[in-house]
Image (cartoon, rainbow, N blue to C red):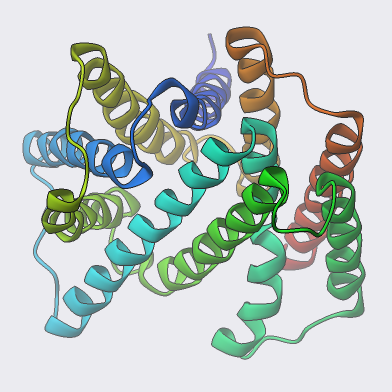
Amino acid sequence: MTIKSHGMLEIHIAVLLFGFAGLFGKLLALPPLVIVFGRTFFASLTLCAILFFSKTQLRTKSRQDLTVLVLLGAILAVHWITFFHSIQISTVAVGLLTFSTFPVFVTFMEPYFFKEKLHLFDILMAGSVFFGLVLVIPSFNLQNNVTQGAFWGIISGFTFAVLSILNRKYVSTYAPIVIACYQNCIATILLFPLLIFQDLTLQPSDYVLLVILGVFCTALAHVLFIKSLVQVKTQLASIIASLEPVYGIIFALVLLGEVPAFRTILGGGIILGTITLSTIKRQSVDL
């Protein structure tokens, strides 16, 4: 296997693991806050161990950086809580597809944060994604559980967009795996006091699933994705990453028997196709 092929294998495994993570909203009969705490806790242990054995510096360069990293950890917690809540009250497909709208939020937020120009193409792409969302959402009645799931999925996408924007500011200062470690550790610390308000009656199988979610679908997935970027171009990586909902929906179909409605498939195809086209366009402009 060539080095490039090895990188492609790593990124596809990473995206597969990211896509599989959505299923835990259905596999675990636990409140989203408990699921996220378990995810960040076991991910933190794994990432800290990797950084310790690799002798990577964890100390921040300033108190301001530490403050921002605390904020990032809080946003990460909100992002994952809304993500799993979306899946639990609707379907894996709806949760993943509505979360996948985050690049649209990034498109409109980047000009504000980085003084970049907003192009007509980006506005047209946003309109196309909105049309896809209209198809995914069966009705605009919040009494409908699928509509509620889509709403929380969009909130999850928005918080992830904010997280991505702030990460962009600091990825040149700190290694991505260090940022991921801080975010997961801080999210764990912030969520811990809230556990007293939750039902913590866990079965042995719940602990096993939380370990898998935290170690493999979070920590390992992040490490593989970051490592693959050494051999895989950013443009290609972005396109492959857009396969996350596709993998997740396939897993949900095979393992949970969740068959997406035709409207969901059609709307999801428009959303993912638009985001892929937008990614290719943006990368070609950057090059």
